[in-house]
Image (cartoon, rainbow, N blue to C red; front, top):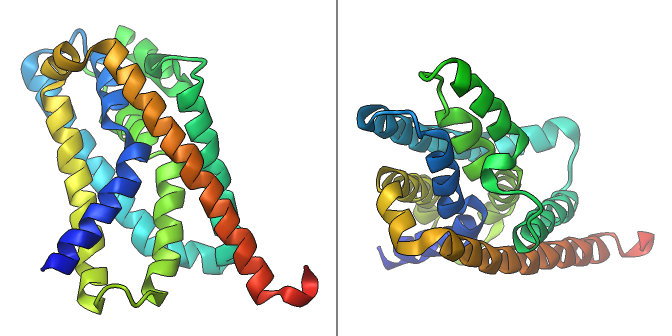
Length: 224
């Protein structure tokens, strides 16, 4: 059981900076201004379910996609590292607010025409929470985790769904209490936390690239 707790903890440490629920809270508040409480709760619940489904699909279908397109693990690590580092730089030096991303702008226009428009999938679930960086991280981990001997097999089977469920529940809790979160943390607090997470993502992305390059050197020494 301790191994499962450790695995889920590592998964949350890796995924939460990418998912960044607080940024999604700011986006949610910006888009749900005309919704009543019941509709906000429904959108929060649906967004969390969507995030869980996206992560599960990325975990179980990622290897199939890699095999289909002939993508190697080192290539995926380098590509995923570049994406994660790029997202980290954008969080460190933001040029636009969460509600100014193209998907949010499009949804704002749709909400202006129809107050009952659904915002649970776009942009709350994707790309705000389960965006390209999160998906790349999940696929990369799914491709390498089965080769590790750090955890028992049953932990590798149970751990990922539990981790994704925890991320979804954290997002649901943040969205459900979005008003209280904003009052406690404030826009300045969210910005500061996002910058710290951005720095962590840059470091993680660079490390992924380093690992990918080392894999290439190790497995293809004659071609380097």
